[in-house]
Image (cartoon, rainbow, N blue to C red):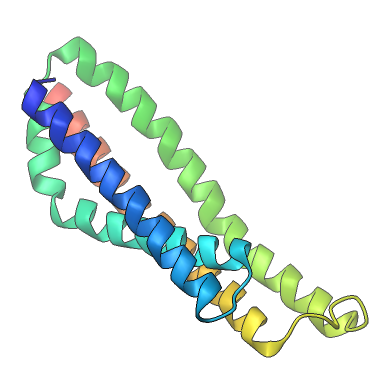
Length: 153
């Protein structure tokens, strides 16, 4: 990786971490959210935004992958197939988590007396962010696998 690309990558990661810290602090200090809920909201939102950006840059990314050597492409293909299986598992698992959460909340209200409606809404928003991120990553991985298979044949 070139020095300029490394510097850009480090600066993007640093900016994301600072932005995450700033927004989390704002949510905790101003809106009185718990730190965990605020952190999960921010990271869930950033994961969804990253998925959208990756979706917009998908052609550019796949074109760069196709330029790699055949051996490297085969290794990446195997890696992406494993990741696709993991994303499919997460895709089916997330609605089950929501269902279990709602069942627990409905049938055992005495266990969740401290949870307020706002907290439940925040948890649902976090689940939606991560579900959207998973769907976008799944679609991106499918496209990359398809392009790599076409190029290897």
